[in-house]
Structures are given as C-alpha cells and as structure tokens.
Length: 615
Image 1 (tube, rainbow, N blue to C red):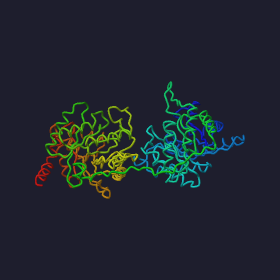
Image 2 (cartoon, helix red, strand yellow):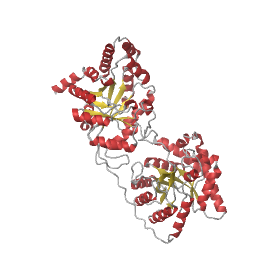
Image 3 (cartoon, rainbow, N blue to C red):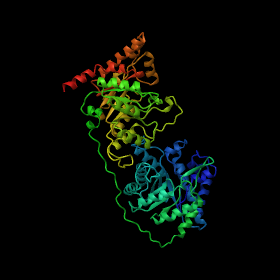
Image 4 (tube, rainbow, N blue to C red):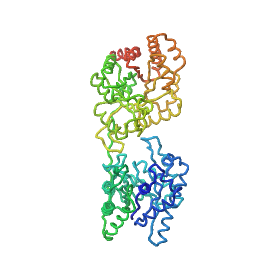
C-alpha cells in the first residue's frame, strides 16, 4: 500500500511561515490542507495521514493552543475524510485515513521531567479525538525513543483496542534509534507490546530507512512500514532543501518492497511528485513476485555488567559504606589556564588528611577551566581523590555519555550529578543552554553506565563504577518540590547527597527528618563567611537561608580580619552542630582561601587521623 508524503514540506513550499503551528491550519485554513490531501490521492497515495503530527497538548502549548487538542485533531480527520470522499466520488479508487501521532516534543523519564503516566495521558487525549472523529487506523511515527513509542502504543490500545496501530521509529546515520536502541530491539519490543505494524520513517534518508527495516524484518512477523525523508536537507540560498529526486525515491520503493515491506511512503522533503514516481515504480513490480519472509529471530539484548560494591569503587564510596565521617573541600577551577594556586591548595589539604576535593563545573555559569581537567591534575599531582561536579547545562545526551566514558577511563571515580545554573546567571547571559536532561535524568544515565550500558541498552565493555552523588537544598523556598526531586534522585540511583551551604540547623534537621523514609547518606555543605557583604550576597543574590543572628554577628565585626575570624567561628559551630546528624561535611574555600577551610576542619581531622593511627 502506498502512503502519502510530507505535509509540512508542501505547506512550507506554499509560503506558510516555518514557525507557524501547522496543525492549527486544520481550523484556520482547512481548504489548504484539503488541497494537499487531494494532490496526494491524485498522485497515487492510498493512505492519507491526518495533519495532526504535532497536535498533542505539549506541542500545542508552545503556540497557546493546548485547549484545542480535541478540536484540531477532529478537524484533521474531517478534512482527510472529505478528501477521500471526493476521491471516491470521482471513482478514482479506494483510500484510507490514518490518524497521525507524532512525538510529544518533551523528554520523558528517566532522562526527562515528564513522567510516563503524563505522556500516556497526553497520547490518550489526542488519540481519543482522532478515534471519535473516525480514523481507519492510527500511525505513531517519528518516535525517537522506544519508551515513548510504547506509551503511545499502549494509549492507542487502551482507547481503541479494535483499531490497527502502526508504530514507526526514526534512526540516525548509524542506523540506531535516537535513544541508542537498535531497529531489531525496537521491533521486538513494539511487537511484544501489541503493535499491528512496525517500521521506520523520517531519519537521514532512504538508504538508512531501508537498512533499518531490513533489520526489523529479522525480529518481527508484523507488516513493515517505511517512509523516509527525501535525503538530508541542504542549505540552498538560505532555505533548507531536500535533494532526493522522485526517481531515487522510486528506486527506494522497489528495493524496500522487495525487502518485505508492505507500507511505503515519504516523510520530510517528499511531495506529490515523489509519490507519483513511487506509484509508477510499484506498478512496474511483477505482481506475482514472491517476497520471502524469514522467521523473526530474538533481538540481541546487551547483558548488564553490575558495578563493584560501593565500598570498592572509591575512597568516598568506602567511607560512606562503612559509616565513616567524610571530609571534603571545594576547589573552584581557575578562570584561566594557570592552576598552580588550586594545586597548591590541594596539596595542603592532602597533607591535612582531607578525604576528597570537590571541583565545581563552571559555577554560576562562569567560564572557567573544565572541572574534569582540574580533577585529573589534582589526582595526578597529589594522589587526592576528587569529586567531579557534572552539570547538564552545556551538553546534550551524546556529549554527556562521551564525557562520562572518558572520565571513567581517566580514573575519575566520583560524580556529583547537577542540573547546573542557567547561562543568564553568568557572565555570558546570551550563551545557549542545552539541558537535554536535568540532574534526575543525569543520575539515570550514570546508573546505566555503572551497569555497563549506554542509554540505548548497548554494552560499553564494562561498568564505569562511579560513586553517584547529588545535591540537596534544605533551605529552598519550595521545600515540597525539593523533597519530590530528592526522592526521584534517590529512586534514579543516587548514593549520597551534598547539601547547599547550611547556616540554619533547624532547616537541615527538618529536611533530614522529612527524608527519613528514603534517606541516603547526607554530607552537609559548610561555607565560611568572609564579610557582611559576602553574607548579604549569599542571602539576597543566591537566596541562601541565613538567620538574622548570623547576619548580626557578621555586621558587628569591625575589621576585615575580625569578619573572617567570625565567619570561621560560625562555620566551626555549624560543623559541630551538624556532625551528629550527617555523614560528612563539604567545606568551601571562598576566593581560594584554602587555609580557611583547613581551620574549620581542624576540629575534625586530628580526631580522624588519631582514629586511623589507632587502627
């Protein structure tokens, strides 16, 4: 069966602005959508997809249309039905209407903030409208990840168990789905979940899609669908143009049908001209040609490699596992290429017996030496173990995995998973942020790497064996949201937490009590204030909770030296009060004053060293 081609490409070619909501045209310009449907039918298409690819609540919300989900989808079906009715009136043949369902355009758990239940609810909302309006089947298409495809499929089977549902994944140049899953694994998973047909669409062009469906054929007995882009777009005089000719798409149609595919069409870049050429090619095929279908084989599933026990992964992991009190000091990377001061500080702290050095990742979105580089230098020159802060601000999920694989190969053993400060807080506010995932998604990625798998369940050759840390903020204004996120981090695989600087022990105590049911070891953040101005900055600019008594003590210090001494005294008191409640402390060294951190830890380190000597 020959399906239609692209809708967006034809709309763009007719002057519809690229940032317009194309699904909304079902309401504001139905005659335009009708005309395109009719052109595809006249070109030989036997199956029309409704103009509803992005008509879900998440995508429509970007255009202020989230309340129009039912209306837009129903209109899309009505227009396609009208085109088919006109076609039949002319006795030109039979045609069917498929409700088109695209990805939600948001990242789902475990890598994103949208729960699978929320995703399924959004799919159910759209599918209900399509089914009520009278589609013949449903096509879930251009799915980047198998978990999202599965939620759409299950939603369809819940709403309309009697309707056929086809699911098409999209693949990259390497022939894998965008979550790293192989076509065989995707086909096997979707077959098991109840799909009536599976396949591949969009992607990087006909050759990639042909390879993908050939692989799927080995893993499923279901009918296959193939609807590729007309190649990769190329910039021509400021416009993105798809350069695959109708003749090339016709050649693809012949090859993909011979490979065992039952439904053929086009995606981005294809037009009625491409469909017309594909129709001619399919007519030319010998109607009696027998296409041998091989029995599906079990898709290969990569085996996990469990990580080492926590106590064997790192010094930090061992201390946490043994219930020992952990001491850390934060060393911020330099703004330039000279790390001599930071390395001298690390040597001082190593000599004192500090357990680990924390290295922030461009804190407050400032441009600094990479945290990974400084971690490696510290470990090589001092032997001190480091904790690499790693943020999601600057990297997509490909870069994240690459960085973490590299960090493991360089013997960095501790990762603190952070979302990261947005660029607008830093000295380059116009810089672009990525945030493919947040800290919760990052923990999931690290946990999978610890089990020897990337996010697509492909083996990486062994466990990365990271000790996984996360951040916590007992003093955040919306404490309920903080508690929810902390619980999700623990559920994702976090093994310990480091708090933001604590000045109000009542907040820390309340926080620890609230997380008792899912508590992991907690290390308290300690910040030695250096001046009243420093205290005001933390309280007002960084929104750190700070009691009036602390502000008053800093205000009463009459000289800079007295202010620093008072800050150390306050920090020592915080340490003494927090120690019975937590599993360790992280002391910051403001403005690179590592001796301040050393003074604060004096009350802890000798006792630890004496204990170690006694053992």
